[in-house]
Picture 1: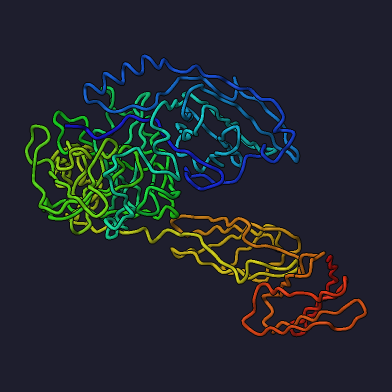
Picture 2: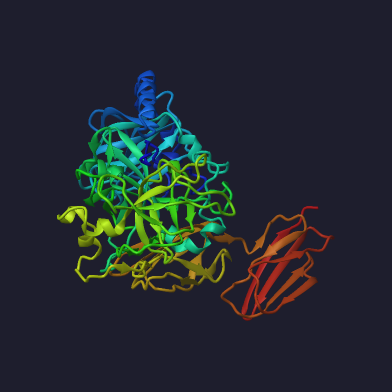
Length: 630
């Protein structure tokens, strides 16, 4: 028998050029990236001694012989703070930055654990690799739920933390780093975005294969945990869960043994370091493609069977320290606490911390026993399907077992199934037993939390949090000539009541209208547009980079003979383009009727080097001189 969880310190890898990973963060780039003088300035670098890998190898070998979890990283204690480390630089225009570099030779990746981090309003931090290929941030006070915090490991053996403080900042920052997470194995098996994932067994089935077609809502509730217990962390799986209030309060169900390790239980501070990953999946059936996973830092324990004399149903109910953002599109899965058997369903999980997989059963579940108390678990036998034979592995612990109605009826404790033993039967702690049977206290039951109004409901459907505002927008054109205007359209969902737009290079720069129109762009370049929406439940924002391309009306100029002409998209009149030679004689005439195009390409006459292009739209007339180089 195996308890299905893995020791690991793998938090995530963030790459600038592609949105592979994201804690709750605001995006952007560290200030030092755009300042040449700061790029060349020196700042303190701390080389942390690598751990004793011979001792770690001995411990890992002993754990393997005893059937204990598989560890891949250790935390190295450090004492880094703004008072004893790092270097300050003033930056042009006011404000200053503090930077500190950390390296640990031989690591596959390193991350940071903070014992205390408090940022004043307007300040932020970034963490990045020296080559700037991986960046975490910006992280502000709003993204830090408690002073105990973590930033995920970045690949390689070096990273830099950068704190920005605006001029006239109010408040004193605190950044105390107490631990360096040293990754020494298995990191690259999971974090390779384009190649086949090798972390889990070859028989596993990706959630976006045909086996997962009927479980697309449920998959948006299935999550991956990266937990911390003492100086080690685990892979576990879990599920976002609904309650009878439907208050969408961030309840997440997993296995009780996910909070145990090395003879210890997770402390409140440990829980504050836990990372929850949403949508951690390949986009298709194959093991290729870059996923867009999102994560939260920090949970609190509500109820568990982990500290009871018997295993019981092996459950752990948590609540995220921050609300799950609207853009994560989490599905709050339903549940059945009525002890009803099921003849068909799936488990959605992260074996070995890998991308999301699905395992299928098609025969009635069996009521079974894991410890000494009868009837605490469902026993399940997996079946072969079109794309493999989904089983469970280390890291699958706590994953949800769904019945034929798509409701959660169990959480994985363990079992002998594997790619080499696909017929081995696994055990899931029953939601029905976790309801009230593990103990009498609220901290030992699911019912007080999933049915807080004591309605007596035993079967609850899942749902999305439709109250949340989700920002989105479009425009009547994405290309405009210099001096042109653009109309914007709000496409946000969740019934927002307030809108705040920001238009880079636009006049006006800001707007609080729902659908602002006539935004004037008077300088060349690709301009960003940001929209923040809010209602009584939440706020959400979206930045579309280089969304509006502001170009010359006629370009290129000089030309080799072909030019692009940009009309005014807010002028509904037909477009007439006339071309005159150097003597003022019309050489060409083009007429375009509706629908208007954002760009018209015309070929100028071969003979001649100077032409005047006239664009006519109703009463609006523009003329532009064009030089042709043959």
